[in-house]
Amino acid sequence: MGVRSIFDVPDVRAEFEKAGINTHFIPFIWKYVIKNPNCEWDEIPDLPSTAYSLLRSKFKTFTSSVDSVINSNDGVTTKLLVKLQNGAFVEAVIMRYDTRLGKYGGKPRPGGPRSTLCISSQVGCKMGCKFCATGSMGFKNNLSSGEIVEQLVHASCLSQIRNVVFMGMGEPLNNYSAVVEAVRAMSGVPFQLSPKRITVSTENLTYKHPVQSNLL
Image (cartoon, rainbow, N blue to C red; front, side, top):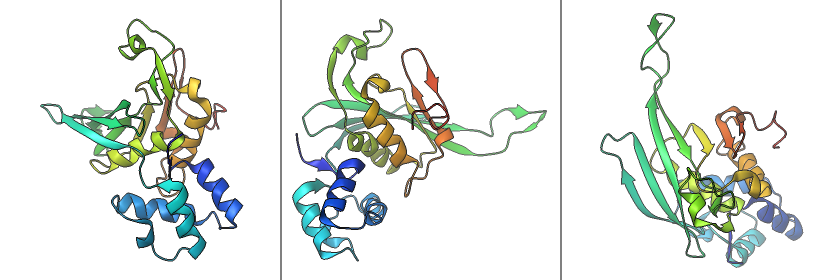
């Protein structure tokens, strides 16, 4: 197992509780790292002294990096190739649209530009669906909750993400625990995505309301 991501919330929470550090500092740390992705732990202000040594010894701000960014000719989609710390790659795709297009009830639609992020939950997939390119890879490994959340952080540097869909590489419910923890992180501070805007798509079903569908 490599160094853990600061966005691996179960591990961070467990280590903080073990060290007697209040876990309410975790969202504050996330917010700082999101705004300052190249920061060092000592640069984050107002943490207990024990937190700095724990962060240096146990966690990294990011365990993944963006290897390449490819924009479509029309600028509607952006594909991020994300390199994990084990050397494997996954894809995340930003899809942009404008809710004002078309009419509703004969009147102009409200809203404005929106971005949806399609993220991966595994490297490869066990399901072997014939219509899916990932299925031909076979299963390689599960992503940690931190590696899933980091895709959102990377994409947020390029666009304001309003919706997340688990429709990238992998079968989300075959990595259930990590997906649940990632959804919990995304719907909490500082991301604060509405659970209704996080869609988990499986081989046979699509959960558009994770809380109501017992994912959480």
